[in-house]
Image (cartoon, rainbow, N blue to C red):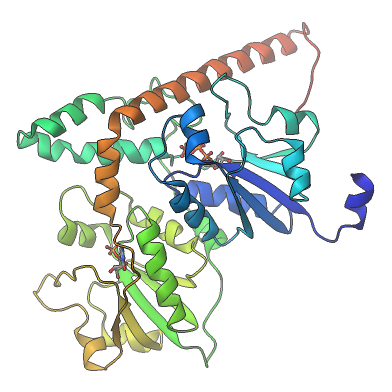
Length: 379
Ligand code: CTP
Ligand code: C5P
């Protein structure tokens, strides 16, 4: 192994996970993993494996594979990677070591999924992104249903009843998933951005939207938009603006979070943070935009009742793109609501396991500090 390593020009890094409802926390862990080597290989578990160990995922394996492939730090995705990371898997893909966030992942039987690679010294840890988790997003979506509850809808009153522990009760939460609010910094934006500017000869493409709960529908659209030119700029509307045209509790993710989700996508070169709803002549001239695109979804008018694409249409550079994917943010929220009880069980189980492990680790540390136990370092 070591001799082989010496001859290797590049360091190959392995990551694996469920990557259900991919968010910028996942992307940030992959960014950190990539920084530890040259090539990043990501193993994604099947629906069957996840159901067995954690409970059914919200997104299908095909959707999850596609989402991970589109994260800009990922070089290769291994579909159907085993839940417990083995040395055989690392060797099969010529990976030097495995990287995971500083939280604990266990199998249905409570075994650390990384115990084999930790024991072999082929495990590295990166910092988990505080304040974002699938659990928290689900909590936010379920809070959305309070609006319906107030109107007396029975279906949603059940959701409310069962959602009381999701994303709200911080006292009983695990230190990994039950953490505080996400604190966006300029450093994080710099780490996520491409740092590129369009070359004078580049054909600049501009698209704008909410891009809330960044999903495969957005991804397919951005892939098409990317094909229209050389440099893709995505304008993100402010939370107030999105709330104006989407209503209810939308957006589920705030502007800072949406910026990071979109920046993590390999098709995107630049993001306008808080873009005007109507695509103005000033904006088009400033960024030298040659083509403006929108998907096949409905286009809401601006607050003054005017078509937001009036200027690009007048200039003859507006294009509707059909990505062939009809997924919407609303569809995701509906999927979550349909699966809310499974989610509740899954998250409660996960947090219980994490709390138990943390307690055991604290006990262990206490013993070590009191000189009653040998110190071992396996991470
Ligand atoms: N991860 C992270 N920061 C987060 C969420 C996840 O760094 N806020 C990391 C995990 O530590 C892991 C990788 O993303 O290395 C894949 O995580 P995954 O197996 O999909 O599951 P969870 O950790 O369960 O994600 P979540 O809490 O969002 O369900
Ligand atoms: O709805 P939202 O503002 O997030 O959409 C952003 C862009 O993605 C819009 O141009 C929309 O038409 C496009 N889209 C798409 N296919 C989907 C979902 C969104 O083309 N399934």
